[in-house]
Length: 334
Ligand SMILES: [Mn+2]
Image 1 (spheres, rainbow, N blue to C red):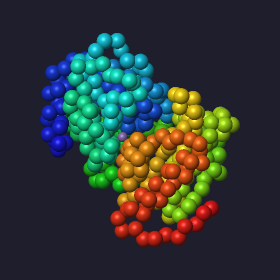
Image 2: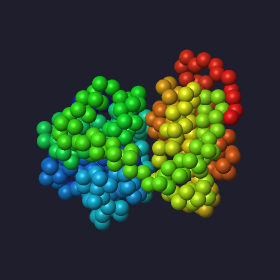
Image 3: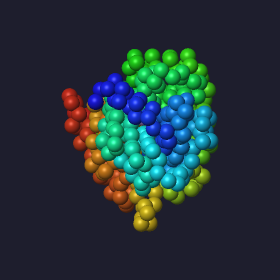
Image 4: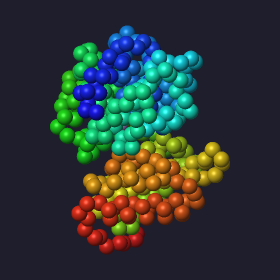
């Protein structure tokens, strides 16, 4: 469905309903949180009743977002008139087992997006759900406030890797310009997101980088629960470590594996995947029942650690080989 058609169909669906529940995926990122809060501000400007619920905590670096204190972590009692799920390929992806609502709306930009809701708007070319919402906000004719602009700018800045990923084009900068004109403070937002890390995160990064291995065009690293404890780090501190691996010259795909304990009490490994250009790590994540974008995805692998590494690294080599117009590279183990 073209975006204009989706927006034209979506606006009346929003206007004719009164109570809304907004949620996004577990372990929420800047797009999930920024987009949810921006949409909350828009619906409130329309005079609606809005609840924003996340299964998981909001990372400290996003605590500056206007409206963040309205987020709840348990679903409200009763059945919502309309639930809006952002960036979820299924209800379970929200971290809630069910979303009690008479009508559901799914807005997503992941390649692995699925039409599970009553109304589905999936645009895998969009750089962020925040960018899709920006078009919706403009079409609504409502004034874009400083709060909305701050939330949408955060969503787009974080999901484009600060306007550097392949999804970034002229329209992304036009959107950024408009949001800054509406009051988004580009410097303040970057300060909060990129220059407010707890020391534990940088300590953990040191451990992760010393665990790094390189084989041909593939780099990977791991942290165990023991290592996290040694750094005084938590799961949130693992965010972004994989980007250092893909930042190496000549590396085309990378994996970062973090140990967690599964509900049944055994070790498993939450895995973040990254790639450059044509290498498709969404396809790799999907092999292991995960998902994401061509250049950024995630999945969970069974232990033990050495077999999780062997499995994912061999798939990353295959993904590198399968990309269009690849030239053979010598394999060198460091
Ligand atoms: Mn996103």
